[in-house]
Length: 414
Image (cartoon, rainbow, N blue to C red; front, side, top):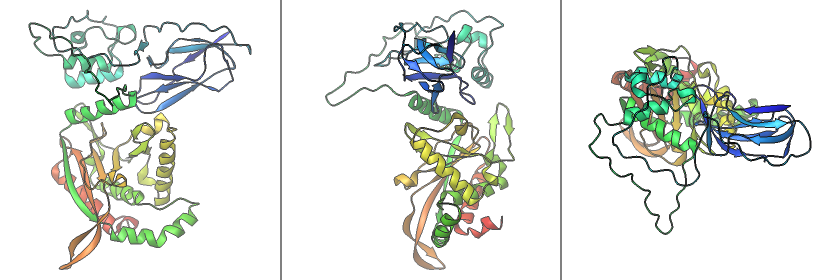
């Protein structure tokens, strides 16, 4: 009896993945729960394990294929003796393959032969339906989709919106990839990198993004940390006291006072939240990822530091789970660990704001009418001006500054 290997549920808003690597070949024996295939989503890499012991009899989705949740990846047959290698089956309609090597050049704008409209009972995929509603277009105008059973995907909507309103009389010839010069190498973008590029560009295109700046004197926070870091680490079983917990707590307090900064736009509505799920941007094995510290508003300094430390270690090892990368309401990113003095962070959609921390640098500032050298940090808040007014954004940064410069405010809930 054959056991099917299927694409598992991939998490919130994730409906497709790319087959990155098969760890077994057809005909090889596999043990129950042994990792068989590695899927790359737009957030993390997921391993699919064998549901039963036996022999890998067939690979349906080859490496590089794009597969939907629930799609068949391969089959396992009972038995301990390796069977003769079977050819990889051509992928079904729900699986699209991407040839290795150079990406095909994009077609230049020109007359597009649009397929017939989908049947009335074939609904767009959820992400596509939301984008259709947001953009005010109709499914019928898009035509048949490229998804399973002709369903319209988000990519179909994006392609439709990118088409020119009036096609030119003659189509320009497609642009061929440029010839490589000596010392150059062409490498195909990973799915994660393509998704990061697409989402960052979407954030710029869809939000009225603006950035406001302030600076914070880190003297008090650094003194408090220096005084108690050893006792903190000893009491909390090796958890180290860093500055990120100070900023998380400072942001939580400011978000409670200014709920619009913790809200998001959903169609014609604004969704306000009574909780704070704090996204913390960290460098992973395959690029920047943003794991989420859930209910950060109810965590202590130690709880926050423990969660962030765990995320950082597993991000470097590529072991974060999909559910840990979704559901954030606000994000903090720290370019200072790489030496950045000032930057304008891009929104992590659908969130409405993101705080950028930067390098702590000694600078001369005026204190009580005298010039003193203090450890200063620039802060940047990028926000969606459609939902957050300038007064709210500036006030938010001032509250963060006040809480960091006098950490006693955090302890007294001021």
